Length: 145
Image 1: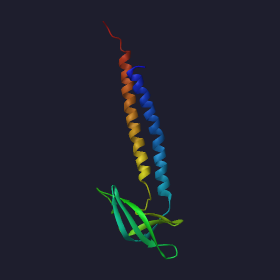
Image 2: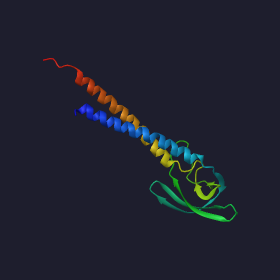
Image 3: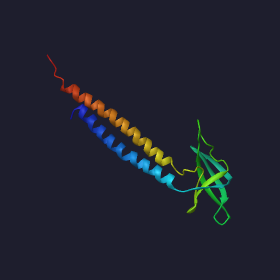
Image 4: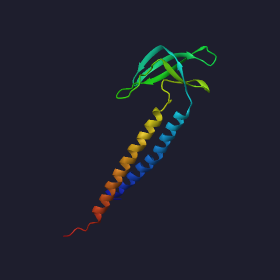
C-alpha cells in the first residue's frame, strides 16, 4: 500500500469518527438543556478551588422549605459575556431537588467537548482526504524519461 492509500485510509477512519462524534455531542447538549430547572436563592457554604474551577457547597431551599446542601462544580469563565461562577442562585431540577447546577442550561461541558472533537475530526478528515486525493492524482501523472 502506497503513501496516498495509507493517508486515504486514515482520512476515512477520522471522518467516520467525526461523523459519529458530532451527533453524539449534539445529543448530549440537547439532553442537558432539556432538563427543566427553576432558579432558587442559595448561599455558598464553602468553596474548594480545583484545576478548572471551584467545587462549591451551596445551601438552598428544598421542596418542603427545609435547607438542602449540595456540592456543585462551577467552571472558571473568562472573556466577553462570561457569567460569574456563582452569583447567589442555583438552578434546580424540580423533579430531582438534588440535581443542582450554577447555570440554567445544566451540565453542557461533556456535550460541547464531544461536539468540538467531532468538528475537529471532520475538518482533519477532510484535509487528509484532500491530501490523499492529490497524492493519488500525482501518482497518476506519467513520468517521461
